[in-house]
Structure formats: structure tokens, C-alpha cells
Amino acid sequence: MPETPDKPAQPLALDRAERPGWRTWLSSSSATALAALCFVLLIGTLFSGDGAFYKWNTHRDALRQASVYGMLACGMTFVIITAGIDLSVGSVLALVAVAFSILSIHLSWSPWLAIPACLALGATCGAASGAVIARLRIQPFIVTLAMMVFARGLAKTISGGRKVSTAMQLPDGSWTAADVPHVFRAIDSRLLGDNISVVSLIFILCVVISWIILARLRWGRYLYAIGGNEEAARLSGVPVTIMKVLAYSLAGIFSAIAGLCQAAQEQQGDPEAGIGYELTAIAIVVIGGTNLMGGRGGIGLTLLGTLTIGYLDKILSINAVPEASRLMLTGVIIIVAVLLQRRKD
Image 1 (cartoon, rainbow, N blue to C red):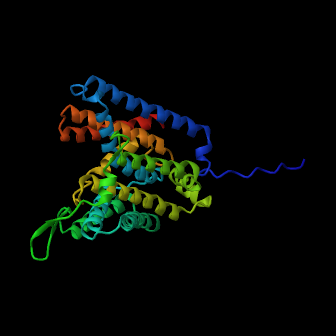
Image 2 (cartoon, rainbow, N blue to C red):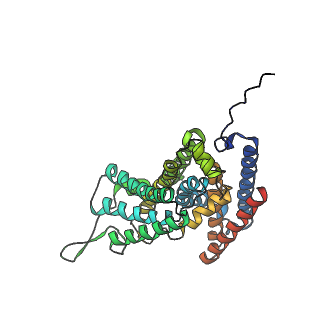
Image 3 (cartoon, rainbow, N blue to C red):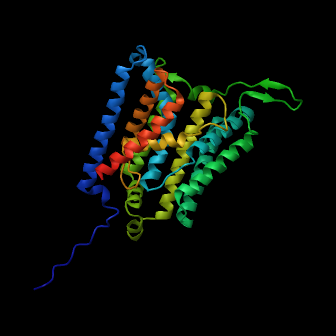
């Protein structure tokens, strides 16, 4: 009898996102993340801070405060999907905040030059980490830890170890006050009758861009494939090195966007800004349901995680819970979220 020709096998790594199991896992993760958000909102109704939770300003400010963390989490999502980690996002934020303040306040650069320069700075930091990780095969934890220290040191070097603000020292030793740049005021403004912050709209734009990359472009499938099985992805023709560099570059770009917003909100560039922000970004991604082992997750989950952490922090704030207790609670939440992921797996 004539042999029936075998059908060409589909590459395992590239086909991960098309299997029913993927949809089941994603649906389960979305339900868990949504349940966590609803639980936090329920806590807010029970502990409303003398009715502050029922005021629109509280919700507006909660989203505004969470937006910078959410931008970092967008970039972190790309990295974690590839089974990596980026500990440098907070330091890159500080570096960009300092650079943006120097260019805009002290050097009076146009926003059309200062913003692209700062985005390029963030992308360069991320690309450098990605290149070392991909080409030299060094653990992402080690490489991004080194970048975290380097970027923080560079921020302190170019700022002289102090905040870059509108107070400038003249050559004769006297001090003068510069005007707050228009771009700072624009980023820190509110629209629709002061009901929504521009920073929140920038965060939503970051979410949309991230969703397009992950859900609609071939790059997204490649990133999922690398996180699912890097060797299988390489054998399937995925440009693993380039895609890893891209993932960390995107993390650097989103960190730069967060740095621009941070500088505008504080009207200064603080080289100490962003300390511990990487912890919050990782917590957001994990609480949302993106798997720390890579290959599974999504930006919608990160959005839910951002809202959960943002509201939790706001509820604790309006109830006068000390910051130290908030940090401890964040650590506990990360452990619980990882344990829940293990149960689903």
C-alpha cells in the first residue's frame, strides 16, 4: 500500500498560543486577576477612610499614582514573557528623569529633542542588558542587577549627586530660579474638567501599544515562543538574540516614559527616584497572572495587576497605614500570587 505522506509538524514553540490549553490558562488567569481586583475594591468599601473611597478624586488619584508603576510593568511584561527579569527599571527611570530635567530646565532643549533623546537613552540601557544576556548567556538577574547599579551611579554622576530642579547655581555662586518647562506642565496636567490626568492617558497608550505588539505582531509570537521553549524557538527559526534585545529595549523605553512622567510630576530630576519600583513592577505583572517561568501572560493581565496594586496602595494610604507595612504586604502578595500560579500549572 502506498504510504501516506506525513503532515509537516508545526513548531511547538510557535504554536503555544494557538492551543486550547493556552486559552484555558489565560481565561483562568484573567478570572483570578479580576477576582483579586474585586476583592481589593471590596476592602475599599469596608475601609473607606471616612468616606474618601467614595469620592471620584480618590479614584482619579489612584490611577494617576499607579500609572508610573504601570508603565514599568508594561516593559516588565515583555521581559517576563521571555522568562527573563529586569531589576534595572527603577534606576533607568531615575537616570531618564535626571537627564530630562537637565535637558529641559538647565539647557532649555525643545521637547521635540529632549523627549526622543531620553527615550533613546532608556532604549540603550535596555538594549545593552539584552545584548549581554542573549550573546554572553549570562543570567538576566545578574545582568540587570549590574545595570541597576550602573544606571543609578550614572544618574548621580550627571546630577552631581543632588536633585535637578528649577533652582540653578550661577557661575558666581549665586542661585536663580528657572521657569518650569511647558512640557512638564503639560504632562502633569489634567483634562476633561480635571477628571483625568495626562499621565494616566500616557499609561493607557502604553497598554495599547504593548497589546498590539504582543497580540497582533509577529514579534509577540516570537517572545511567547522564546519564553515557552527557547531552544525549540531557535530551531523553529526565531531570531532569539534579536528578540531578547528587543524585549529588554522595550523595557528600557517604557522605563524612560515613566521617567519623563516622574520628572514632570515632581518638577525635578531626582537621582534617588525609583528605588524599589522594580519590586512593584514585578508584583503587578505576577499578580496579574503572567507566568514568571515565561511563555504565558498578557498585557491585559498587567492592566488588572496595575489597578489591583494601585487601589490597594491608595486604600492603605487613605487609612493611614505606614509605608513599611505596605512594603511588607507587597512581598506577601508576590509569594501568594506565585503559589497560585503553581496551582494552576
